[in-house]
Image (cartoon, rainbow, N blue to C red):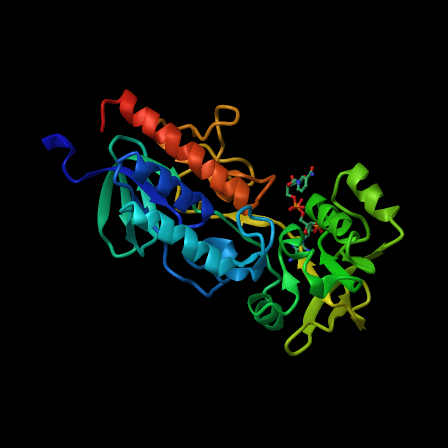
Length: 329
Ligand code: NAP
């Protein structure tokens, strides 16, 4: 490292989900000495943990390499261990603010320190939106049959041939409901209005499926059950009337919020829904040279652990090539 590069990190990875740790594995093996800022656990307004959304998942059956499935937190421990094997450095801190207006970039951390970086990989993920009910969060974090990802959890044995419910009226809710019909005896789609927001084709697919039944003008006001969900308490948004719907699984599909609040949208381009905008096709480049994005913070479509890991790999390779072009090694 030349004198002028002293105290400037070659690559800082913000985030510690599958995207962040995969970027760490690749950049560490490329001798870029990465620093991962893995974040600080939070419980309010929703639960956010280093390791990301998989820390709130129970069984993961769709990540290749685990033929028997794996618990989400265990998988994150495994990926982190793999990154640490190649001497990735880790700080358990959040990034509060970034100055991306000049290079090297400046990151302000939650312990009030600042660091400088030649390149940054943003892999901060997104958080599924939840209703914020106490029993919803309790059952979601204990494998009680409440989830925010049907594709991740829907095929689990506890949901087979059972009545299930999806909350939401957008494309995600339609997709999740259609997916769940493969396993469920019945899928209720609980929506707060009397028409879906989803595209017509996806809404029609659900409305024409005999296993699906919309529950219009309704919000979930409580989730029932001790160890496992037994039903939901609904409130009619028109009449205020309350009722109970027995279900053995509840899937939230009320949108995701990308963790990009620490970025200044005047410095780096975000989409209308605040995801990082990728500027060059399938690559990880953002509107700022030297800043790369990976995983759910830049992905409103797939949102899977395996796609996040793949994006982390791409961001690491893009960063490595960019640093080499700058003569930084
Ligand atoms: P979305 O379009 O924002 O829909 C969120 C849904 O959740 C809305 O129906 C909304 O109700 C409801 N909702 C939000 N907050 C709620 C609350 N607190 N309580 C009850 N209901 C609540 O989100 P999305 O469905 O995740 O889709 C996100 C983007 O990805 C969209 O652009 C979508 O087209 C795209 N997407 C595409 C595909 C595909 O093409 N295959 C699949 C999935 C997603 P209201 O309608 O009343 O606002």
